[in-house]
Amino acid sequence: MKSRKHSYFRLFHSAFLSRRGVFYVKNEGVCFMTTWNLNGTKHHVLICNGSSCMKKGGEEATQAIREKVSEMDADSVIHTTRTRCNGRCKDAPVAIVYPEGIWYKQVTPGLAHQIVEEHLVNGNVISEMVIYDYKKNGFVAPENSDSIKGVDKVESKA
Ligand code: FES
Image (cartoon, rainbow, N blue to C red; front, side):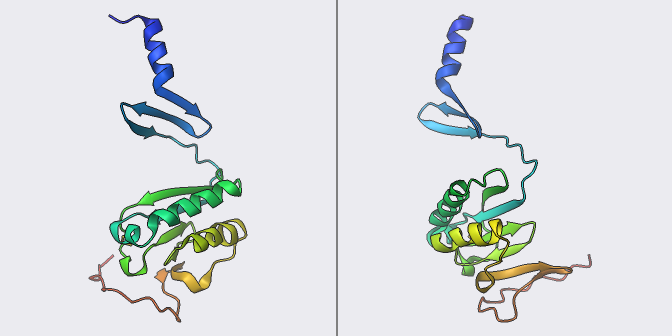
């Protein structure tokens, strides 16, 4: 049986505490086990990491959004999440900003920086890159949109 001292030693060498939470290094892989306190968060950005978006620069877009959030010291008010496919692959890479319900298309690193700085920090939507905007009755594509309409879903009775 291992001593308590040995257990603490192992814990010390297998876990790192950071400002952002705790992550553990297991064998050769890294296992993140983060539980954020999201009180006070103002925006949630869903960054599509589905296969179509990743083929068209989704990783670069993800990194650019996260780097800009950190650079602007806005981690406490902007939360980001990688997602699987959001169903708008023709617009890849896609990022969605809540609570506004704004969907952005073709998110390059440059647009990613604009989304953070202009939209999330200064409140100005980058309208020319919007696929959908959430209005009173649901998502609405801009009138001048050059994105494809997409396949209609079967109407529900809800
Ligand atoms: S993979 Fe991103 S919308 Fe489909």
